[in-house]
Length: 326
Image (cartoon, rainbow, N blue to C red; front, side):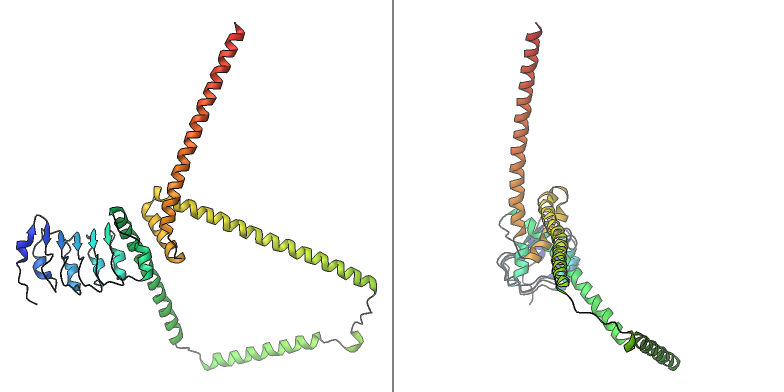
């Protein structure tokens, strides 16, 4: 479809505003000539798809594609390394390309009002304010990066299995003969061992009938063996239970304290847990952080109060000692 608008006339400062122009195609060639435009607004148009050539707009930092009819995002969107702000609000997108995991500079992402898959929707979470949209960007990038690593590993395993199955087996006639000889010699040795293990009738051991005392000793041995089994089971189960409890406590403290030291690593960790358990781990993290902060404040107050009381008691003791000395 021919473009009836002059793209250059839509430039204001660093923003190229092409919103509400009833565009059905993205004028990539015309936009690429405007190097000053770092913010591109294509919202409120009739776009159904985005051409892969949009990645040539490497100078774009903010891209607004909200309120269109997009069903997918270009697979090579990860090549737009400078992209920091991506608005996909109110489209028909259900899946995201794995290359979005390469958008390391992406700081803001809105995926509201899209028929996303359940897993992606859980990872994305709400985007009702700036903080939530920033969290959405971090979570989606970490999640897609993790999924792509798993896909690459699975492809590698399949390729290795395929090459192993199709590899030619080069065995010569001499090798097959040697294998036959070794197999025959092994069979002979095994037969010889079996023959050696068979005792003649004169050398067979005859076991006498057991008396009542033997039965009592058998019952005692059974009891002692059952106790031994119980002790061994307890020795195995208890350390496992302790390890599970200790690991759970470590995971809880990691979820609560890790954001204070390494926010990207915390986002990857919570995203992984959220995908694997399908639980709102991020909400639990926020509740845990609030509870931890409140508990810390109470503890600090108690310590300060204890310190004050101790100083007062110590001061009174010094005054009493001075009075006694006078």
